[in-house]
Image (cartoon, rainbow, N blue to C red; front, side, top):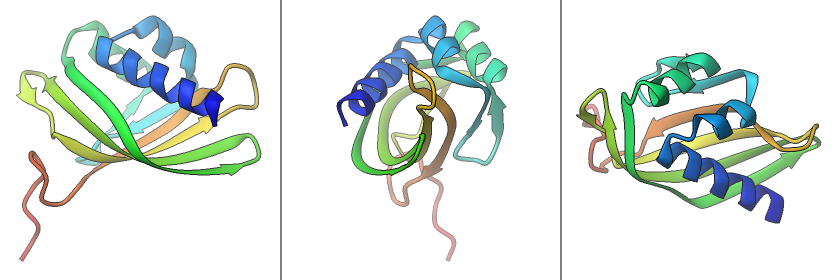
Length: 129
């Protein structure tokens, strides 16, 4: 898991610091990110929010990993803990991420990311009922 651990550490650091050079190299051309409210971002849109400064992280970490490998694809489910802002609004403190990494070429690349709220954490909407 060392290569995977190294990749995830480098990716979380790039997200936290807005390192668009790393992200441009390590997101697949057809990358899709799904935010906690269900919106989708293509690779160009993902990079644009960092370049414009619309997304700012003070902290960004992953833990609680569940890793499943299927040939050249690894699916990681993890807890994301972050503090920052998006377009000036506070980000949810914790999300559950599903991260799809392809490693058919070297280096590994991020093909998809799906984020969802974790119930009853700061920033998450109220549960119905």
